[in-house]
Length: 412
Image (cartoon, rainbow, N blue to C red; front, top):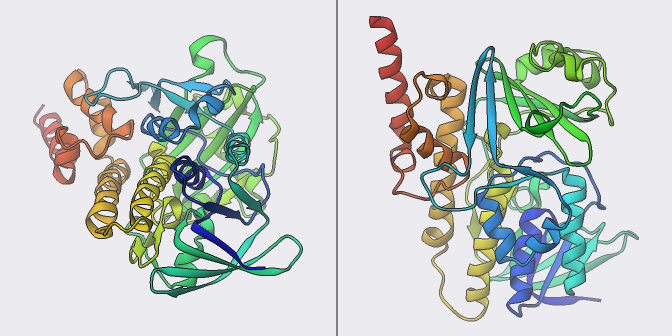
């Protein structure tokens, strides 16, 4: 039997849950289809403060906060004996001073169950196989858990399918990323050697080489996510036997963490994400919008993935609500241009991280507190605050400051 809704949301991750929850709260008839079953393990376990605005506005914060996830108040970057710590309470832009470090399987499932509890129709094991558009209205073919197909008629589609990239595949919207090919391998470890106090809770990035780094994300359940990131050629050269052997070798390269994690068993076979950066030809069309990883994914180094997912999910929901009520929406300026601006800011910081220019600013001594506060705002996700010169002048400011610092060293 055909189903009729105002908005169809594809995917029940953070973007899909934020957008569907917002729409439901506004009285919009919304349905969510999710190909997998929850809980399921995915990457993206470190959040940044900007996402808290979205969880709060969508009415999901209280439920998530009740789970007592590990509080993240900043981030630490380690390079040999050099340490750089950013504190989210000491930043240029007003906003949240903390967020969470979360095992995504539990986190996403908590959100999805809250969405269902609200009364939203969320269907698991429902795979989108085809989409047809008649003007802005759409007919989506979905195969359910029993292998039966049905049609869902919607006035608008929000594609929050993440790495599934449903509409980019079906509508030929994929586009090569402008970032160099990088890959990662990660797993969870029962953190039996976790130090007491702050040291045991800090999210850390241990720089092994300019383009190679290890992440350590402690959770409140006693487990810790450990992953290696680097050029795809480096990651592939770690082992030709297994992802487990590759990650074990990567851990041995870390002087800082070898004693804490060396020799410990992995809680699941490490997952490899190869050449993970993604882009699209366009982020919207008549009757649809792409959010989160369905459109752009940059790099895990600054934990921007979930932030862009919820930012775009919330914005797409707001614009879709207005459109189905008859308002004319300029999706280019109100959605695409806005999202691309934030993506471009973070893309600059990702690129300058891997050139080493941003690392030059991180570790320069003595520290410049004003510069650090402005960079901290970017790392917290406030990448649309054009009052911040490190946002407004992102194309050149990091590169130019690094050049000045390096030139001064040469003169000395």
